[in-house]
Image (tube, rainbow, N blue to C red; front, side, top):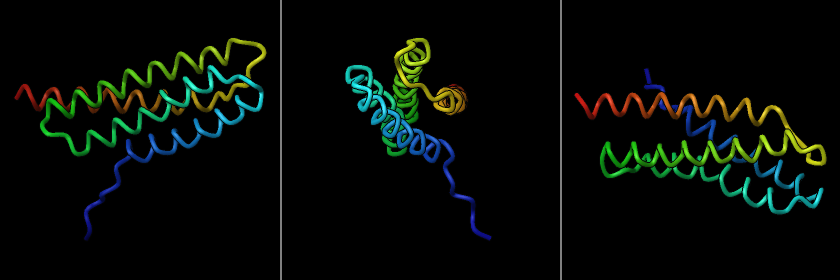
Length: 119
């Protein structure tokens, strides 16, 4: 029986990045270029850092890359909250829900990796 090789965080972060790209295109249609640019950078950077962590040089490097992904996720959350609160901006509630799931996974992975370093 083959081992399940699915990597949920990689799948979720890639799917999220694609959703961010689509949402940023919508923002640009509304001429919200500054927020669109910032959100595109931070929202796609989450998955980029998670992917980079897959080939980290050490457990400490792995944790570091996931911490960067967590910071990018927090920045992304900020831009999405601005869109939510600004009346003239489009907003997609599902993006914050998906991001919340990703943040939980990232923090769980960081905590597990830290425990294995300390052991």
